[in-house]
Each structure stands twice: as C-alpha cells, then as structure tokens.
Image 1: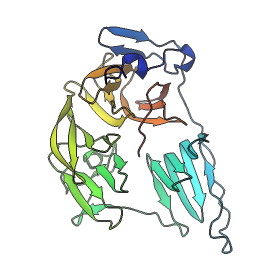
Image 2: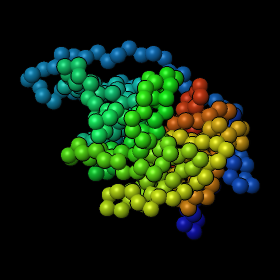
Image 3: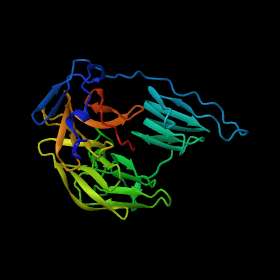
Image 4: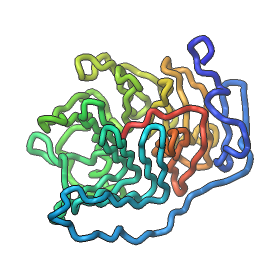
Length: 318
C-alpha cells in the first residue's frame, strides 16, 4: 500500500518460478509485463468416488473422509482447503463441490462451485428451487454472508435453451435472492437488474458487487440489505462473469468476448480504477482464490483451467 493505494508491484509477483500462467500478460496503464512461457494447464483425470463405510450407531461423530485433487492444511489457522472435484463423507452424508474450506476452530465449512449434498438415505438437500410458487429460472452464482445467509443470482439463461440447461418457460424475473440462515425465509433483495450474474461482498461486507450486462454494479449494505445501487465499472463491448475481492478490497473480475486485449481477468481498485489485467487466450468465466494463503487465482476459461500465484490475498468467501 502506498498512500492508501495498492501498487501494481504489490499485486503480482514477478519471479518466473511463481508465474504459472501461459500466454498471459499483466497490463496496467503504461506498465507492461509479459509472463514467462511456463504453462500449467490443469487437466484433471476422472477419479473413483469415495468409498463409503457403513455408519456406526455407536459412533455419532465418525471421522471425516476427504478426497480432492489438491488438499492443503494451514497449521497457523487450523484450516483445511481442498480444491478440484472435492468429495467429503461423514456420518452417511456426502458433500461434493469444486472447493471446500474447513475451519477447525469454528467448525465451519464453506463449499462452492456446483455444490451437491446427499443425505445418508440418498436424499439430495435442495435449499431452494421455487419462489412465490414459481420455479427459479437458473441460479448462477452465490456468496455467503458472515451471518450465514446465502445470496444468489438468477439471470435466467439456463431456461432459454438446452445448451446451458433445460429449455422452459421463464416464470420469474431475473433477480438477486437472499436465504436467511436461521429462518430459511427467502426474499428478493435486488430486482432492478437485467441479468444479475457474478456476486461478491467487500471484505468488510459494507458493499455488494453484482455483475450485469454491460456493467458491474455496487450496492451499499444498509441494515443488512443492498441500497444505493450504482455503476462500479462499465463493461461495454465485453462482458464479465465471476468476481471476487482480495483482502485489500480490490475487485477481480472475469472478462470475455472482448478480444485479445480484454479477455482474462481485470483487477479494479475499490474506486473503480483499473489496476491491471491478466490476459488469457480465451474467454474467462469463473475465478476463485485458493491454496493455503488464498494467493493463487484459479481461472476457468472456454476450454482450460489456469492458475497464477499473486501477491494479493483473496478474501475468499463462497
């Protein structure tokens, strides 16, 4: 931080041993840095499912079995991070997700990316599939608040054709929803957007960022609800999708359909200033911070999964 502003040098490590991204360039204003050609494109093999032992009635707290592509343990914070086709089994319940973080101190587990929970009797837990008596269109992205509530977007693309989902009649508008952790009550918290997509909170949860067509919007959180919606960044000529904040409050946004000078990931200061870009040879859709320190950015693109180590630390929340 220099004068309260994050410097470009503090965002990216320049050591070649830490750059894992192929054909990537980091661009910020007049400053240009091209990453060495050391590629790490991850093609994960198909793995067998976790072997499920029979539940023991004598032991109500059976050991937790964990399987993933990468598993990391943070000894200082007593936190387990698992990335890539994660499967967890305990007491007859199976959790499948793209990433899971488990805090041994708080006993809190955070799962993200295509999360599926199967109960011991084979039932799949569905948090919400309809609102006001009408089926949801196609929920897209979600984030968890520290109060336990789940916020998610429903842009509606999944019901418009059979490519992303199952074609059906759209019965609800495209909104942002909140599920209360204590009561399970569901409410529409944002209804003024065309296609709400990626969503994340600022580190202190005073701001909520939501991607829309042609822009990324930001809302103040007042009394636990979004207010004063406004344009954070205009994205005319290209589109954003997944977004996440780092610990300094900078916003990392996926970028696509804009060409070689746009596609990849953009990093914005909380005031909306573009700090830099990670350029990819294809459209980027979803991004997540991972590994022990949350200083590795994973980026899913059109046909590839990329990763790059950063000096920035992700403020990782599902």
